[in-house]
Every structure is written in C-alpha cells, then in structure tokens.
Length: 132
Image (cartoon, rainbow, N blue to C red; front, side, top):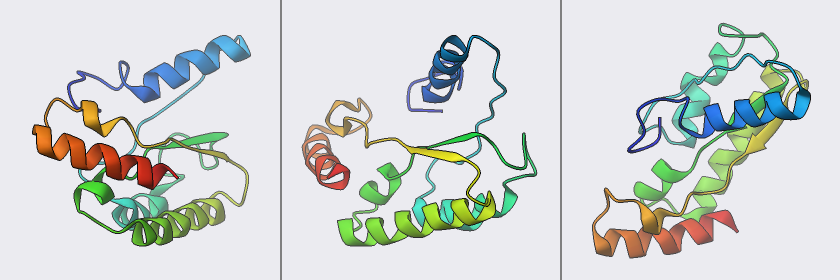
C-alpha cells in the first residue's frame, strides 16, 4: 500500500484493476504481492520464486512498482538499471513469457509528505533521473 493510503483498493493496484475491468467489460482477479521497503533485488529474491503460489501460475498482466526504495537507498542509476533488468528477466522466465509486464514510472517523490523539504528536492531530482 502506498504511503498515506488505507488499502490496496485505493492504491495503484485497485485503480488499475477497476480500469482494466471497465476496458474489458468483465471482472478481473487481482492480488498485491510485495513488501514495503523492498528494493528491486529483494523483490527478485523474495517474490519471483513465489509466482504461481498466489492467484494464477501465469498471470495475464503483472504491474510492477519498483525503484523508490532503490532511490531512497541512494543507489546509482546504473545499479538500479542492472537490478531492474535482472528482475524483469527473472519474472519473464518464471511466467515463460506469458504475462504482459507493466513497469510503473517513479512517482513524483517531490510531493511525498513524509519527506523533509531537502529530501523531497533530492528525491524528486533522482526520481526523474531513474525514469529516464
């Protein structure tokens, strides 16, 4: 769940699921799998092996929100790019290329209320770099 939100229904996952239902004209099954604070490498290690234990063995769509924690850990963009590429390869291999993978861009970090003004400025600039 994103910072300041009460449930995944309010967050990106719920919003994406409702939009997909409207577009398809039928209900969709969705599930959020993740952990606050996990970076790209940790996501690959902890969650990719478990694809298939939840929901569907081969989901049609995987929406991936990753990078904020890499940024907050002050990783270099090159390290994030390497970890993200590895994560995407691992997911693709696990689902045998069946799933469409949607990677979300970095959110507007400069608007995060939990960050100090200086950290908002720094994180906002870094998020733009990570998105390039």
